[in-house]
Image (cartoon, rainbow, N blue to C red; front, top):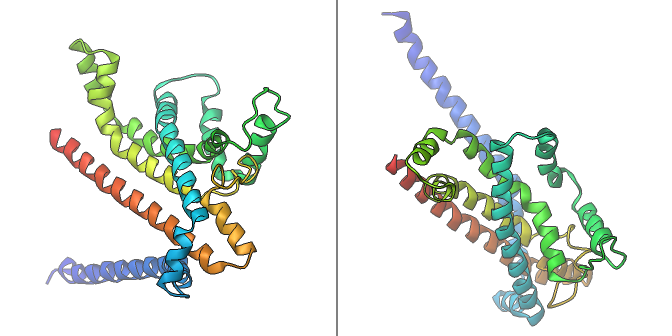
Length: 277
């Protein structure tokens, strides 16, 4: 018997063992960091019964904050779909002085405490605005804050796809007389769309739960600029943890549904594009 024939089953068993160990570690970690906290929040939200849960999420104050949260989060995500894609395009396709600095600045919202972003925006667009533009206590101010903290999601989702994109197809389209707009719409955009949707979903999910970046610039005006995270803090401070948990569950469901739907759509678009090739 050849030595390799004896060693092969041993290698296979080791690989299976390592695979099982890796899977078990991931499941354990996800359970501790994600599943158990989610279960605790869900359990708390229904601890006083389904009727109390329903009353908490249908309270006029809660409905108003859901409406405001959805409005500003959708707009911020759409703004970053456009500006994030443009930023990724410039960083990949153009060369200019200070490009590495700009590339590093894209990740600044990840490293910067979000309350600092709110303070900076308040200093720039508050009552003593040096640019004579007062946006504190307005939805536009909240949207600016959310757009700032969610910009990296779209840029970093689109950038790798642009780097891997084959420029020969674009050159072939240009040689056939296609304009830049047609090339982008027919050649580039279909390839980028799955990553754009993924980045938009992450940006939206981050925006609906954001607190620090809007706490100062937003003004926390009920029905106008108060977002769900601010209502949750208020409920906790007034000893209504069950109501806070119920509102949190609604936010979690919003984020999950959006991410799930966009992921499915993005996967289908990706498969369709691969079939065309």
